[in-house]
Length: 63
Image 1: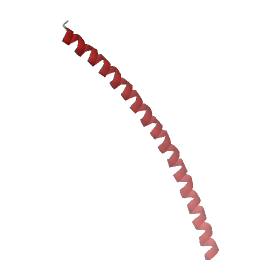
Image 2 (image 1 turned 30 degrees about the vertical axis):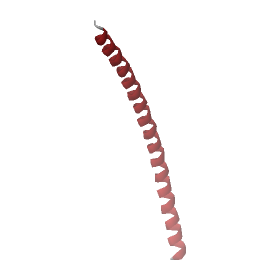
Image 3 (image 1 turned 45 degrees about the horizontal axis):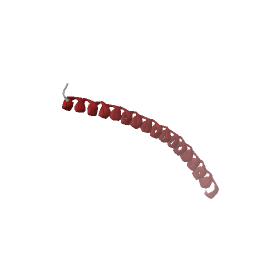
Image 4 (image 1 turned 90 degrees about the vertical axis):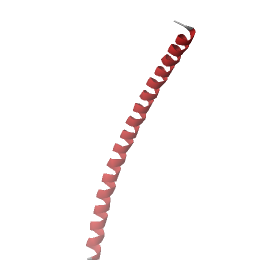
């Protein structure tokens, strides 16, 4: 293997490792965001229910 081939091979190995690390990091971020979306969805659902209860209560008082 020539010196240039060796340099290219080493560079490809480093790039491959870096790409793999970035892919794992990206997957972890996606999972974290998915968990946040799920939590927010639950909160919005509860908030909408509370709003509905409040609106019904206020309608009952003013009717």
